[in-house]
Image (cartoon, rainbow over the protein chains, first blue to last red):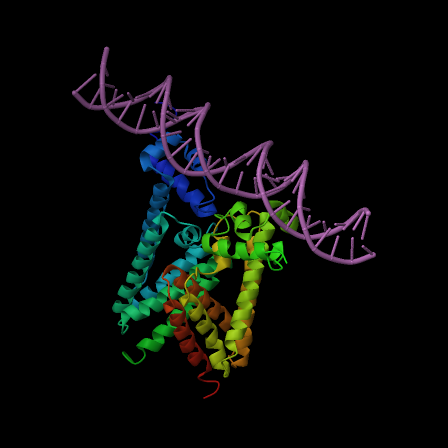
Length: 194
Length: 194
DNA sequence: CCGACACTAGACAGACCTGTCTGCTAACGT
DNA sequence: ACGTTAGCAGACAGGTCTGTCTAGTGTCGG
């Protein structure tokens, strides 16, 4: 009946505002005041919901991890062979890097500046462990010998692709990484299944 | 005659202090006051020498570029064959990543946060162009076909190695990158000089 | 009707930020 | 002897930061 349709909770609006601002301008550069202004929320609500800016940052990073996870898993569904699925991780990254507003890895960006509480470090470790595990699983599916070691190399490629797309915008670095991964994959599976 | 030996200039001490603090804690997190305190310099001297914090940041990044350049070129002198020299860039990075206090790429770290003046972007672009040019030269020496394209791939590996060593400390990522580069190099030079 | 709850608006404290300004000291070249 | 240059010490202005606190509003279950 009132003008506004049933408004989302303060928590949701805060998370959305934090996601946009923190990713675009950096966790450190964006103050609480700008987050609550964009969210249309009172400062007291932020502190009663999250307790501190650190915990808001943690929630922001967890949301980034979750949406990244969902995007990658959904993006891989279109591929069928194990080889395509493995290389598809780089295809998904290339698509994302081609979109406007891409600013690289939220976790690395956040951990580039001081992190006294260790919140950023914790969340960055968690998301990196997930990425590495994903690559290791895909390696196993693809029949790569020593999948853990190969996953380490793929993580290097993935990191390089992300940084490259951040500093030289566009999908070139992810596509270069995809090409390297393909050569590596051929080299390592050539003898095992000719 | 006085207690102090002929002291280095305010500029030198400021640059040294800025280098240590900015690299360890981030350009944004470290305030002017801490820089001048560590340098033992008056605030007015900083502003008469550099004009603004932005220009101090620029000088810091240029110093980083110069010392990195010198370190790499000196480190490559021990290698003789073109192949070893190309892969040696990753050896030098691995050595550096193994040292305590390594915190990744000063340029990427600085550009992760807001950069309204564009100073960081300018210096980051310059140093990345140098790196890419170095790789291209080494590719030409090694007789790699299409050295520019191969240099692009090596930059991806180099970026990935740097990020990996930052977030998972130690020389593992640079050594993995070296391994990948070796495989790529073999794949691309196999047909040209068997 | 009433009490619990979620929320808003905004003042405030105390710290820290960049940048400017005033005054002072000392070495050095001419 | 004197002006220039380099530098030191520190107050100050005006802004932003996180986090706390007071006070009021509206809604909903019982």
